[in-house]
Amino acid sequence: MRISFQSFSFSLNLSFLNMMWQASLSIFLPVLLPGALAATTYDMVKEFSGSTFFDGWNFYGKFDNLTNGDAIFVTSSVAKSSKLAYVDSTTNRAIIKVDNTTKVALSDKRNTVRISTQDEIGVGSVWIADMYHVPYGVWPAFWSQAPNWPTGGEIDTFEHWNMELHNEMTLHTNPGCQQVSPAQTSTVVNSTDCSFSSNSNAGCGVMGPNDSSYGAKFAAAQGGVFITEFAESGISVWFFNRTSIPTSISSNSSSFSIADLGTPVANWPTGGCAIDTFFKPQNLIFDITLCGDAAGNKAVFAQTCSGICYDDYVVGDGSNYNNAYFDVASVRVYSVAGTNTLVKGNSALTFRPSSWATLGVAALSTGAMILLQS
Ligand SMILES: *[C@@H]1O[C@H](CO)[C@@H](O)[C@H](O)[C@H]1NC(C)=O
Ligand SMILES: *[C@@H]1O[C@H](CO)[C@@H](O)[C@H](O)[C@H]1NC(C)=O
Ligand SMILES: *[C@@H]1O[C@H](CO)[C@@H](O)[C@H](O)[C@H]1NC(C)=O
Ligand SMILES: *[C@@H]1O[C@H](CO)[C@@H](O)[C@H](O)[C@H]1NC(C)=O
Ligand SMILES: *[C@@H]1O[C@H](CO)[C@@H](O)[C@H](O)[C@H]1NC(C)=O
Ligand SMILES: *[C@@H]1O[C@H](CO)[C@@H](O)[C@H](O)[C@H]1NC(C)=O
Figure 1 (cartoon, rainbow, N blue to C red):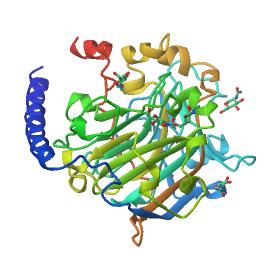
Figure 2 (figure 1 turned 60 degrees about the vertical axis):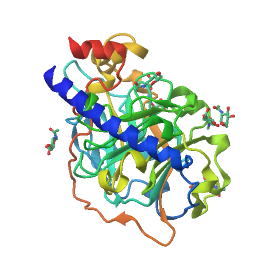
Figure 3 (figure 1 turned 45 degrees about the horizontal axis):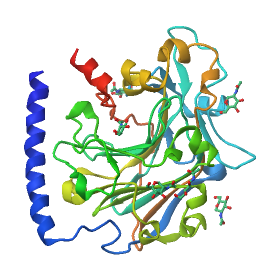
Figure 4 (figure 1 turned 90 degrees about the vertical axis):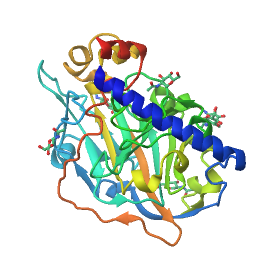
């Protein structure tokens, strides 16, 4: 209790300073939305799609020792032989999924996938994931982190768990990165302190305004695109469903202007947190885990599911996981026109430090908070 009280007063001081700073700024400056400063043009530098989608990713190849899920993140060869990561020959899209055909015995874990890019992507970039289906009834994420997390930060573009209805977008950083909500375009700001050491590493999360950004509604709308801008001026996320994708993106043009995208659904301007200081080149990651620290927390699980996460879902024939898959048309990486922000990575299998290891009760639900205190 003493530790959490100390960290609370520490973050309070920081946000007070920040508030004063923002308040003094706002007297002189109008609020500038990202993109309003200058219409940055981005050029495509890398595309993961079609039959070569899985080239350039490392498979984790070990049980989930990062978020304590009841899951084994399989090797590339197991993923291939058991068809947990493959390119669908009819659609030419990548499928990344949980095993839904094997009977798992009590005390065993279920196979699933976690992949991360060999290359890292530096500041001055955009990445766009075009997906037709995202996993639900599990804990999926499309996100990024720097190799030395929490140094270098983490950007969660797409994440939620169980049967929640909205996407949740979050940053996790070293202490000192604070967001001041009036400066964000996001409509529901869950928390403003991005530090991994505050609030059980809940991060500075923002809830997506669109219920077609996760779950069955995402699939019913034929999915859409998630666009992440990692710029010195700030980090922003846009979501467009299938019918509302801006033409410069849907036309597959190798170049687009950020001004084409309008207002982001989530953004974290550099004013509250110096992007260059807290964020370093990122590896993109897709993963799906089962139960685990956040999704399997009893109070969190009970918010949208009944029964016991492991006993009633993971164990058994796997039919609970027929919707636990990503269906990805492409992931494209762009750099500010005239630059290349790709940092060539190592193709050797590397294990990343946990970003969620301490997440625990990240959902910040009343139930979860009570659990934390007991
Ligand atoms: C997970 O396992 C890998 C490989 O054995 C190890 O390097 C890493 O430290 C482990 N991470 C945690 C959080 O235990
Ligand atoms: C898709 O997005 C458009 C534009 O925001 C919106 O009008 C429409 O209702 C959305 N469709 C679904 C299925 O959410
Ligand atoms: C998402 O929600 C925002 C805010 O309600 C709305 O302006 C936007 O059109 C929606 N986009 C989609 C794709 O539904
Ligand atoms: C864009 O590329 C995808 C495949 O990567 C294809 O399915 C789609 O038809 C293309 N769109 C246009 C407008 O060319
Ligand atoms: C497993 O899930 C896939 C969708 O990912 C579905 O097409 C398939 O029918 C399911 N398998 C079984 C045995 O239900
Ligand atoms: C974020 O806040 C909204 C509105 O209060 C809430 O519905 C949602 O569950 C919150 N998300 C998380 C992860 O706590």
